Image 1 (cartoon, rainbow, N blue to C red):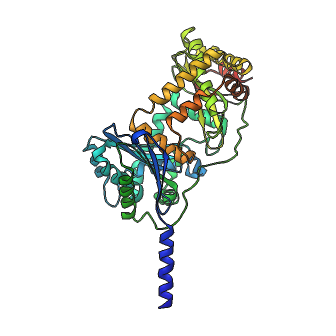
Image 2: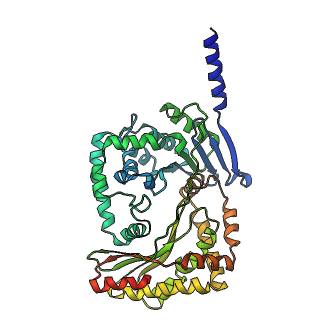
Image 3: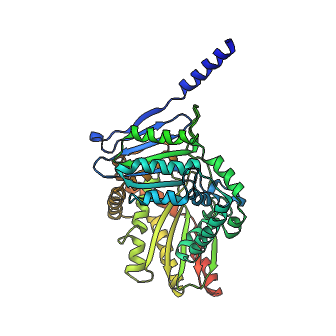
Length: 459
């Protein structure tokens, strides 16, 4: 009797510790834009943003796993798994999953990145319970059958082929490899034909069990939603699948690290019989937690973020050398990339690269004038707000913020941070980032003499 009583007491004490904890992270006016988070027993986090004025809701689940978590032999496993979670569960066939969302006019999809994966459904607010049930079922009850793995292998190989047929897309993968080499961040998210062909159902199941534990997952929901109802429905769905244990397990923390990219002056060329040459000229950027990222965002906007940007004006408007030219930044947990892309006729690639390099060097040495900085700040503020005008974008923001930073920032706070960027901030980050020797990735029908001259762009 004594032993039984002690066990019961211990179990009661453990369950008492494993309680849901709810916080209000952003308090909106009259409840509009309020962001709340509940951490359930077992470490599952549920974050919602309330927008009562809309009639839709987007429900997503973010997994703290991306292609950078793969070994060389597992390259492509994260993306493969993303496909397989749509192939059926213990409760639903693949057709049941898609038909249930189609029947209410909703949309459902997923995406895999280098540091996370997201599955989501956007529906009318009245159909949110259905979306929650379907997406949670996919994440917790996937069968990952061998026959599904074999069938989906063909679809993924076609996706790889489709990407390779689009040099404007493929060149960015090449640039990541140029800068980061044969590392998890430097390898393609889709994997390669060889690695995808080598993946087995058993290896993918082990990968699934390791990375889809509730401590690695974040539920994000935005729109005309009630936080407490969402939490109850999510909890019921996970408990029904036996995926939510009564424990005080802590959620996994955002990634950190101290990786430093030292690659400079490297050139990689992939010969292809294309009508255009596609190039990315770039250098190491900033990690996504770097406080200078706000200034870099302004700099990027001014350099290549719109029709009034320097690169667009110099390359396209004044000379007509390219249809598409822009700059971009990629920030990871511990490093980043800054790149300039252009697509042009092969016989003009050297002139385009020289103009781009001259602009980067000019801004690195002398900075940008105040009027260009002011215009970029205004453009960035406007695009930030306009980019959050639907529930899908809001879901992405709160889910990614929780996963990548472990905190939420209101739109007003974001606008304040952008507006606070000074001309000196932009000039300092321009010197630090653009002052580095660039590397170059190129895809196209470049002949030997042309290819050898590409090194001039990074000299």
